[in-house]
Amino acid sequence: MGVTVLIALISYLIGSVSFSYGIARLLKGYDIRMHGSGNAGATNMLRVVGKGPAAAVFLLDMLKGMVAVGLAAWFTNSPFLVMLAGIMAIIGHNWPIFLRFRGGKGIATTIGVTATLTFLAALIAGIFAILAIVITRYVSLGSLIFAAGLPLMIFLLDYPTSYGYLSLAITVMAFVRHATNIKRLLQGKESKLGSNQRT
Figure 1 (cartoon, helix red, strand yellow):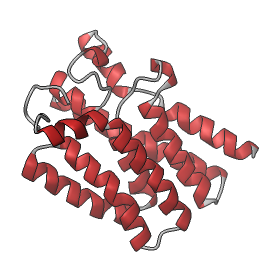
Figure 2: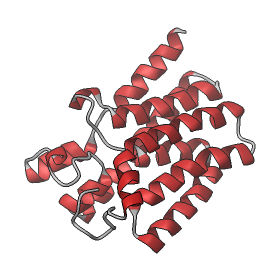
Figure 3: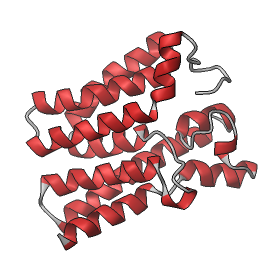
């Protein structure tokens, strides 16, 4: 029980480090959440700050997920606890304690977690997500396809059962965080990649 709590807490704190907030503060002197979509993530960084900072944020947010599961694997051999660490890092990114629980949408961190633990599943889901973004230019749609495809591919590719069930929590979080995007997609009002509208 003590190891579980420790892993969950450390992973959450790792996820709570907001690189988009810090880099925007450093480069522009403002809170990224007060601009664009109000989201502390790579897509909003791309629209508000620029391609280079957005790429850095995306990679660093991925790294958070990788570090969290790597540390958990160092503590334990339990697939459940390692996957739990990844989920807690995503929760930290989405609802960071350091930013009064107003963070990002967790997709980059999710990619870091799943690319580390379920590489092939993440790769296949990612290919479909990228195709959707290329065809429609809706980043949110690609993110949702990635999140929805993950559990399916994890189950189909026979990863540990705990990975499959816990990945459902990742899917739910992604859809919750993209609720406004889903509404705009259904209304035909969602902004596309390359526009300066809110996402």
